[in-house]
Structure formats: C-alpha cells, structure tokens
Length: 324
Ligand code: ACO
Image 1 (cartoon, protein in one colour):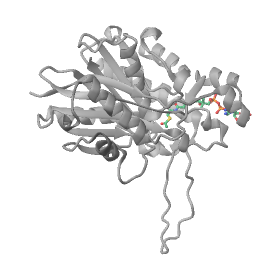
Image 2 (tube, rainbow, N blue to C red):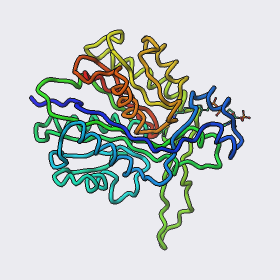
Image 3 (cartoon, protein in one colour):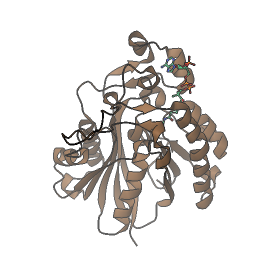
C-alpha cells in the first residue's frame, strides 16, 4: 500500500500592508466596523507580484526545506480563483519558474475550499503508488478580484500564498475526508464570469468582480459546514477532544467562535490569522498551517492530528483529518 504525508510547509506574503485605517481613507468604512464584524485588522496587497510569483516563492521554499531539486517533483497543483491567466495555468508557470521539468502541473478551482480539494486530489496521486513527490499550493491575488468601490467586499480579502510538499509514506497519515459541492446555491458567491463575446452571440456583458451575499455565506458556514465537520469527525477514528488543532478557512473570526462551540472543541484549538491577512481564499489554510509550524504549535513530526476545513464559492466545502 502507498500512502502520502505532508513533509514540509511554507508560505509567502506580499510585503505591502493595507490597514483598516488605510481603507477608511479611500472608502466609507471604519476600523471599528471591519474588525468588530470580521476580526480583520489589515491585509497584504501585492504591488507587482502576480499569483504565480507568490506561488513560485512557496514552491522554492518547499524545495529548500526538503533539500530537494526541482526535477524530483512529480506534480504541482495550484488551487486558485485568481490565476494569472486561464492558459497557461498558474501551476504551469510555477513549473517553468522552478524548472520542475518532470512535473505535470494544473490549477484547481474550488474557491476557499481549493486547498483542501487539491490536497485530497494530490493524496490520491501518491496513494496510487505511481508518484512520490508533489507540491500543493493555495495562492491568490484577490486584490484584483474585488470591486474597490464596493465596501461590503473590498475590506474582506487579501493576497498571499501557502503550500505543502507531499511525499510518499509507508504509513497512513490521511485518516478521513469529506468533500461537498452545492452548485444550486452558487449565486451567493460569484467571480470571474466570462461573456459569450463572439460576433454570433447575443449575451450582454456579465459582472466581472467578486460578489458576495455575506449573510447567506455566513449562515452556510455556521450551519452546513459546522454540521459536516462534526460528521467527518464522528466518521473518523479520532474524537474531537483528541484533535490537536482545527485549521479552518480564515474568513471571519465570528465564524471560528461559533464553529468551536458547534463542534464542541476548545476555542484555543482553532488558530486564527485573518487579523493580519484578511480572507485569502485558497491560500488561507496553508498560510495558517505554515505559521503554526513556524511558531512551534505544529511540530511536523507525525505525532499530532489536525483537521483542515475549507468552505466558500461553489458552494464548496471540505474537511480532511490527518496526522502530521
Ligand atoms: N464598512 C461599513 N459599513 C459596511 C461595510 C463596510 N466595509 N460593508 C457593509 N456595511 C454596511 C452595510 O451597508 C449595511 O448597512 P445597512 O444596514 O445600512 O444596509 C451594514 O453594514 C450591515 O451589513 P451586513 O452585510 O448585514 O453585515 P454583516 O454583519 O452580515 O457582516 C460580513 C458582513 C462580514 C461579510 C459577514 O456577513 C460575513 O463574514 N460573511 C461570511 C463571509 C465568508 O465566510 N466568506 C467565505 C467565503 S469567501 C470565498 O469563497 C471567496
């Protein structure tokens, strides 16, 4: 039997910080409104680096930490809703930038669940026994996706990237997973529709920017996502109280507070960093994971069990429980 394990983690954040006070200079908002409703105090906004630039820095860092050369990598998956282009994919750009000649590479689109869906996909490649090493990255430049004249969304999002090196293992690390999509509720979170713009089509222009019915997404997270996390734990071998940490998508601190209660775990087990980065969609979970390793909360020695859960556009939601 072949198995997969996370052997390295890394993240890369663009340097420029934009605080809530900075935003209040350019739109009708306040630090009080943003931080009391979301927990967000600031976000990082890229000046020149594109999504593939952020993802490339993560990939380089993973190779460094794993003492690997790029030609040892079998595949690269980048989860993103803000690719540099549809073609080539962001992952293909990363593959070229790090010169991972042997690796196949593709993007995966599942919004804020993207990293969890990508990690689950990558685990299947390694479990097949055919591949030994893969890189999975969540990377976003959401600053190009939001409508900067719409205060209800512009204040929520930020740019950044995080990722993991996944390697073959002789023991099982991925214990249980659940992945869901409900396309019938897609309208509450949309971005990047493209119009049928040929001389032969009748379609009018379509909205290009990110649009969100915040209340609907908030309720979806607290109801559907909380219930599915609970069920995933119940279907697995580890009791909620024995999980070391639950790393949830970083959209809103109030969602984390409610989740901890609904799942029945100590609030301290749900680390948060949206205060510093805002909502970075597919990048939020791997950035948080990488920070938890950097600050020593997660040791990466195979002795801890963590839960990762993403939720967002699609609607999509997904949970993985793994030893790390
Ligand atoms: N500054 C000041 N006032 C604002 C702002 C702002 N930036 N934005 C909206 N308001 C106003 C509104 O106009 C409204 O005013 P009104 O009552 O006079 O009409 C008032 O504040 C309340 O607005 P609500 O939208 O009802 O605020 P709410 O308390 O629901 O909080 C929020 C909004 C923070 C977006 C919340 O609903 C939320 O966090 N939702 C979940 C988001 C999420 O989880 N996303 C994850 C997925 S993202 C992805 O997949 C890409």
